[in-house]
Amino acid sequence: MGLLDRAGGELTARAEDAEILVVNTCSFIDSAKQESVNTILEMVQHKVANGGKARRLIVAGCLVERYRDEIRRNIPEVDAVVGTGELEAILEAAGLSAPVSPMDSASLFNILVSRAPSAVHQHSHPNEVGAQVEISRTAGQSGSLDAKSSRAEGDLREQQGRFSREHWDGATAALPEYLYSEFTPRILTTPKSSAYIKIAEGCDHPCSFCIIPQLRGKFRSRRLESIVAEAENLIARGVREITLIGQDTTCYGEDLGLKEGLSTLLDSLAVLPGLKWLRFLYAYPNKITTRLLETIARHDTIAKYLDVPLQHASPSVLKRMKRGGTANVFLRLIEKARATVPGIVLRTSFIVGFPGETDEDFAQLCDFVTAAKIDWLGVFSYSDEEGAAAFELGAELKVPKRTIEARRRRLMKLQQKISARAKAEWVGREVDLLVEGESEETELLWQGRTSLHAPEIDGKVLINDFGMHEVLVPGTFYRAEITESHDYDVVARIIE
Ligand code: SF4
Image 1 (cartoon, rainbow, N blue to C red):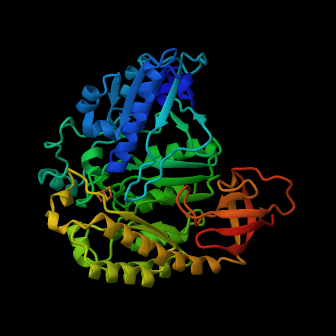
Image 2: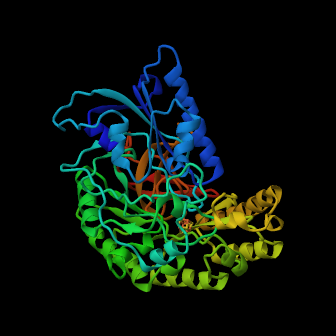
Image 3: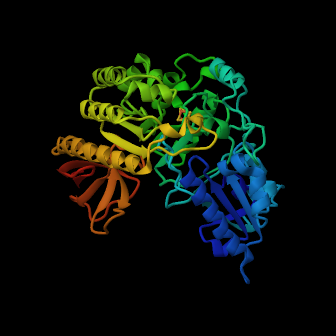
C-alpha cells in the first residue's frame, strides 16, 4: 500500500471506485484459501461488469506462493500476481513502474487493496486491517533485502527438504527472500496510536501441521538498526504502542550472529522516548530464556505479556507435531515466567484433533489447561493441509471432524470458567487504558485495552462511565478502574 501510494495511486476502500484491484491473500489453511478465492472472484465481477471502473486485477500474497501458475490459468481475468518475496513488483503489476515524486500529490489511479481472508493462523497471527488509514511516508529508497544470512538450523532443514515445493502444482521453486526496511513506504491501517513491526520473516521450525516455512521461506531477521529506525519514525507520527511480530520472534537475530537477539532488540526499543507500550507475539516455548523474561520485567514500557503458542500438552502429540515438550516442561516454564515477571499475563493457542490424538491425549491437554490457568487461550481445530508432513500420516490416525469439534467446544468451555475466575480478580484494579472508540457490540458502551490485552485478539475493556469527561478521544490513554467482570471482558469507569 505504501509503494502504491508513493507511486501516485490513491487508495480507496470501495471496489466500485477502483481502477486497480489488489487482493492480498492467505494460503495457510483451507478455509483461508477458500476465502481468498471467493474474494478474487468477487473482484472479477467488478472488472467484467458493464460500466465498472476496474481495469486491472492483481492477486498478491501467500496464495500466489502456493498456486502462482494455477491462478493465472484458472482465473484469466487476473492481470498479474505478486508473491510475498516480490513486493516491489506490485508497481509494475499496477502499471505504475515509474514512481512519481512524493511531492507530486496528484493521484493517478484509484486503488482498492483488499485483504482477503481474516487469516486463521494456528498461531493466531493478527491481520493488520483497521478502520483508519493513515499515510506514513518515509524518505529514501524502498527496502529490498535487509540482510542475507541464515541459521544453521535453517540450513539443515533446507537440506532435509523442509522448504521444498517440488510437489506443489503451480508453485515456483524459488523461496521468498524479501525483507522490508525502514525505508519501505508504509500505510498504517491500524488505529493511529498502535502499529505492528515485523522484525523477521520466514520460519525454520519443522512443525508437521504447518506449511508456512514453504510459503514464507527460511527465517531471516531485519537489521536491529532498521527496526529501531522504523520504530522512531512511527513514534514521531504518534504511535504509542508497538507490537513486534514475525513467524517466530524468539529466534530474532540468530541469523545475524546475535545471541539473545530479541532481548537486545527489546532493550533498544523500550527506552525510545514517547513509546508507552511494547510487546512481542509468537514466542517459541524452548526459546524463552531467563534473560528474555528479565528483560520483560526490567522495562516499564514492555507489557507484562507473553504469547507462546504451545499447540498441545500431550508428549506423544507434541512429538508427532515435531515440536517436542511435555505438560510438565510447559508448567515449569509458566512458573518461571510468573516468578520472574510478577503479574505477567499469558496467551497461548492449541490445536485439537491432530492425527492420532486419543481421548487420553485430549484429557492430558484439559488437565494442563486446568493447572496452567492461562489468561488468553485460543483453540483451533486441526486442518489437514496437503504439503504438510501431518497430511501424510495414515488415514487411520485422522480424527473425525465431529470429534474434533466436540473437543474444541469442551476445551473452550473449560477455559471460559478459568477466564471468568481470573477476570473477577481484576475488579477494583486501577489501570492505564488505551481507548479505542465505540464498542463493536453496542453503541451504548465504548471499549479500550490495557497493556495486558494485545490488539485485536484478546478480550476487551468495556467503558460504561466516562467520569469527568464529556467525550473520550480514541487513541488516548486514560486512568480507569475496573468495576465489573464477565467471562472474557471487563467493565471500567474512567477516573482520570
Ligand atoms: S513455528 Fe511451527 S507453526 Fe509457527 S510458523 Fe513455524 S512451522 Fe509454522
